[in-house]
Image 1 (spheres, rainbow, N blue to C red):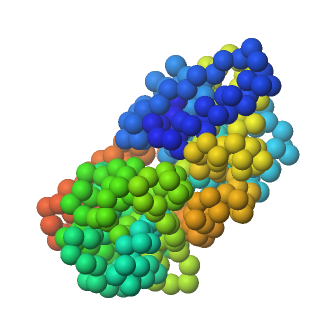
Image 2 (cartoon, rainbow, N blue to C red; image 1 turned 60 degrees about the horizontal axis):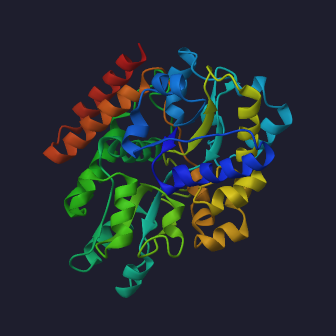
Length: 377
C-alpha cells in the first residue's frame, strides 16, 4: 500500500519490474490511497491486508505496540543497515527506529521546504525570501492577482505550526512529557495569522499535492514558505510550469526546525514470504537503485547518494541540492502510541483558530499541551 501520486506509486511499479527480472515467478501488486487517506488510515487494517506498506514515521509507536511490523534488524545485515543509517537524509533513517529496532527503511525523504515560481518572481524583479521579514516584504511587492500559498488542511496546518515552533523554540516538545513552550507557540501562531489574510484563497483547502498542482498549472501562486516538497514538480515537463524549491525561511544561521516527512518501506508482521519481501526491500532501498530506477520513475529518494547525484539534481533543477540543508536540520514529529489522533485533532484546532481570527493564543497552546498529554495515556 502506498499513496496515489506519481511519487508514491510509479517508482514501486518500476521496482516490481526490476525485481521480476531477478525473481520471474514472483508477482507483487501495489494499491494506492489518496494522500489524506494515506496520512491517517489505521495501520492495523493495512497490516492485515498487505505484506509491504509505505508508512509515515508517526505511526511507528502504535505499530510497535500492536506488533504490526517485522523488526528489520532480524533480517537485514548490520552492514546494510549501517549503510542506510550513514546515508540518511537528516533524521529520515532514525525516524523509523523505536525501542532499539528498525521498523522501516527510508526509501523516500522529505520535509517542509519553500517553493517558488522562478518565472513569476523574475517577471516582477523579485527575490526568493531568505527569512520571515523578507516573506512579508515579498507579500507587499507581488503584483495584483499573484499570491503566496500555504497548505492548510488540518494535517498541514499542524505541520507548518510544528515547524515554526521547532524553529523558534530550538527544542523537542510532545515527544515525551515536555510541553510546547507557550511563548514559542504564540510566536508561531502569530506568524501564520500575519500571512493568512494574503494567502491564495485555495490555501485553506489544500494539501501539498493540491497546492503544487495549482501552483504549477496557473500563474496565481508565486511562493510558498512551508510545504512538503515534491521533486516531480521541479522536473521540466511534469506540469505546465516548473516549480523551484529551496530552504525554508530562517532568521538565524541555519534553516532549522522543518518537520520531516518522507515515507518508510515496512513489512507486515503477518507476511509469510519474508525472504522474498526482504530481497525486494534491499533492492529498493539500495543507493544505486535509488539514484537510478527509483528516481527515474517519479520517486523522491531517501538515500543520501541520490540527493548528491549530479544527474538527479540536473533533472530537477537542483531540487535535492537546494533543499538538503533544510532536511539535515529538520525536526521529528512525536511517534508515541496515540499520536496520529492527536495530530488530527491539533491540526483542526489550529486551522479553526486561524479561520476564526482568534487572539487567545496562550489558551490555544495550553489546550494543545493538554491534548498531547491526554493522547499519551
